[in-house]
Image (cartoon, rainbow, N blue to C red; front, side, top):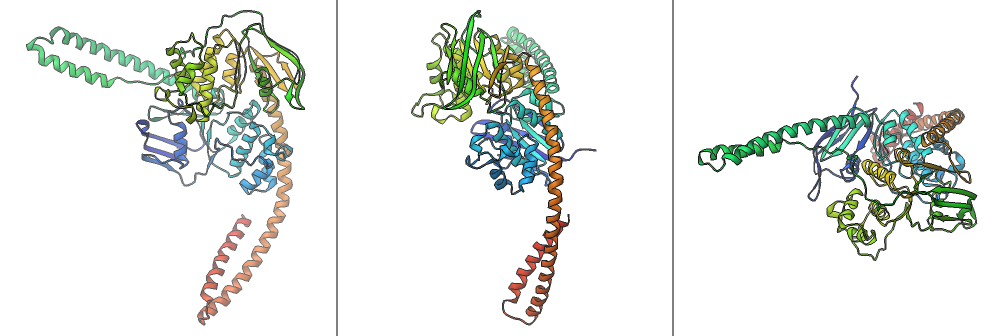
Length: 579
């Protein structure tokens, strides 16, 4: 049985000035599928989402939604009153009963105790869970998720994965996390070169298909170029002869027609590397942490910790949000003071730091290129500065963009590029993969892996961590320990814990549902009795008013109209309660 079409895109066109985002793009999206939406930054993925949501209009063409579509969407921006508790926020935003909210929250391992904390006191991961809960309380059957894994810890990502795999509706998912896509998606949509391409398979199958297509195009273009060369040879030999002039002109036109038949296709370039100033691989101490205590003020997050890193190691700092990963990185970067103990980097090592939150001096009128040229190591060429801007998704037209008008994502990308080019021996990176597309994340991972310096980083992108980490620090319950297994073993153990927790929460959900359903049933019966009683009263008033209208009593018609409207409302309520 064919699946229902939920969204139809027909001859979609969208331009921003001279930049073409969509050029007569066509696509159909069907119910029950999880679509991974792929494409480079700036290709039009988020624009596509905004048009589906009705937040932006196409220049031409149509996006038609089935009348049964109920869209769920999570905005990137926070919408919280930080003084509210999570439960207060959800009660206000959803108009649901508290037990319904608590039941939904348990599916994302957010117990009532956590819901009752002020939003200001919970981590970014739990704030994202609040947004998910709010969205799901509206019972959507079509969900649009734009980079939902940004700032989520791995535990929450695993919970979201499990939920998506059980969801019966349709999902459109933009994320740079290849492993997340690999685990949940059933079909692929690629937004590229003005088109929306649908492929009925997962991300790995799609890239295999694209490689096969690319190979075909390379062979086709090679044959075209061979024919062009043969035609050009004739022109070179006989073009000057008057008797052959007409033939030469005809063959020149043939060359031009063949040029139009050539095809191009964008494919990720696995051989591309980001420029990092050369650091020779060497042995010896990279970092020695002795009896350190980290935290803020009188709040201790981890106490009496000892850690050691060899030069050239790539250390992944893992753990749930709120456990202290960023605090550890800020302490090692010198952004905040250790509460006790000490740490030291190897002799002569320069340390660079990239934070999640990035701001530039608002008085600085420098352009994107000028800023990066100024901070980059003096030995780095202008050409390499420009190549680095390209690696971090800045087009040539954006080189002259003022720092004062950059978006949050652009600021983060520019600052990360700067950290790469400043010539540090040690890099401390807090969530460097956010705001980057999938290809850029993979290129960055490969480049850092080959780099000779020492790296300490936080990331929840599994492919990035798995390909890069040579050591794991686990931050959990007030301690920072070296994890003895590899990253795949760490993810496996965390997934086992997540599955067990969800099973326990499922039991609580079932118990709560049974308890509140019984209570709710009593309330429903009482409300139904009262509604029917009120309907009888309205029937009597309507009968009397009809007689008043017949007798032409002043205002009787207006009163009758109000009572009849009230009768409709009460009747709707009765039907709702009976169902």
